[in-house]
Length: 168
Image 1 (tube, rainbow, N blue to C red):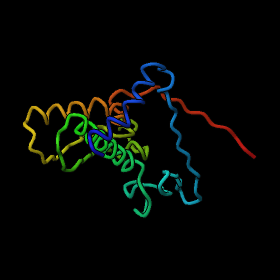
Image 2 (image 1 turned 90 degrees about the horizontal axis):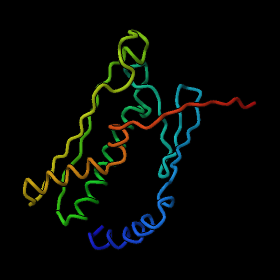
Image 3 (image 1 turned 180 degrees about the vertical axis):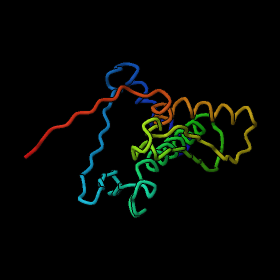
Image 4 (image 1 turned 60 degrees about the horizontal axis):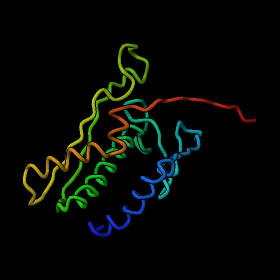
């Protein structure tokens, strides 16, 4: 999307949110259906993704690993955010976005109660091609980090809660 087009689309939204802060609050939803084969099918809006166990925990590698999906969500969000920020700043940029995360599956498999369950480290990297100078690229990355929803959610975790209900 061109800079002018993005600004034209976002300006009325920004104006509305300045005038009515409540209008900016949105609750996103995700739903899944448990499968009989240690899987969960999740509707993404574009496709149905069947998530299952990672091969390091006994999975067959034929289903999506939710850890991979978390990193993919980070890459997607960071890439989209970088594109929007670049458009806003008038910086032409192309390139790639990479994320990698470290897991110790001893925690997930309850082999070692001291081992963490979840990522112990996540690294996000941009390999950029641009005529912009180093200062402009540093600003682009800094603003991308600041405004990327998934990055900020991981960096400053929200309050989490879990509930369940029995049906049938």
